Length: 276
Image (cartoon, rainbow, N blue to C red; front, side, top):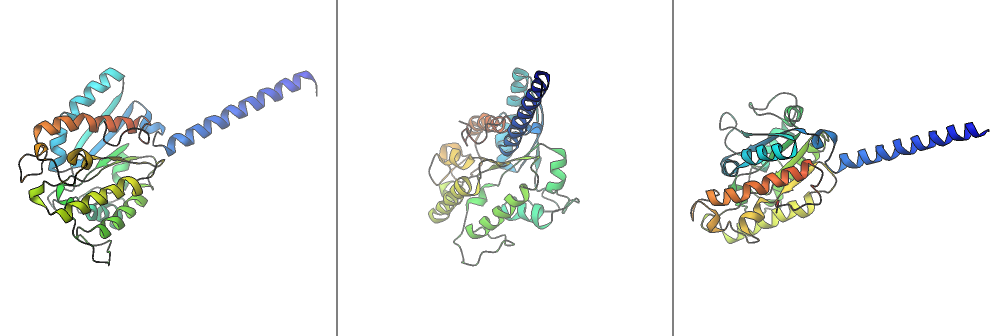
């Protein structure tokens, strides 16, 4: 082989190395939730919520994203939807209901007029969802868990969450952000039920959530309780109403937005789960 052939062979090896490294980095980006669809400037986000989510939204979420897009030359489009609607499904957004709509009745057609993940993931790059505060009123386990039960028990929640995780993994092109549940004020629950809620959402953070996949957590429960078992009274509308008040909503909204952008931009597994 003459010198010309050696040069050609060297160039081909160099190109092969570059292609291989680029492919590896691309794969790593997909595993960390930073694929090209969610790292680019054009990202569509849907926030599925009820009343607690509306409070945080009104705390300044649209304004925050408008400012962020202007300052960073991004086009992160976020919209909110009540999910599920009051009619015909019913105003319930607990683990059973997400499992029922997205897993038990999965497919290309809506279930009771509610979009399945097959539908949502065609339209949005990021799907974010939450539960209302009754989710934290968790009763004692029976010892016979039932994935198809709407009873608020840890044993049922865990089965439903595992099935939801498996389902969300079917859509690697989409990123999911799950809020830990809204907490209850002390006057709206018992010590035992509140402790079970704290333990369940600790399990969600530390066991259910996996680094490197397309699912991320925003730790709303931690923000509301500040490490306790009840929503802090000064964050609530009243001693008996666990809806976030205006002051707390204004504090929490930018933390949520920061968490969303961290996830979109590939920092989801390294940055704070609360957005702080």
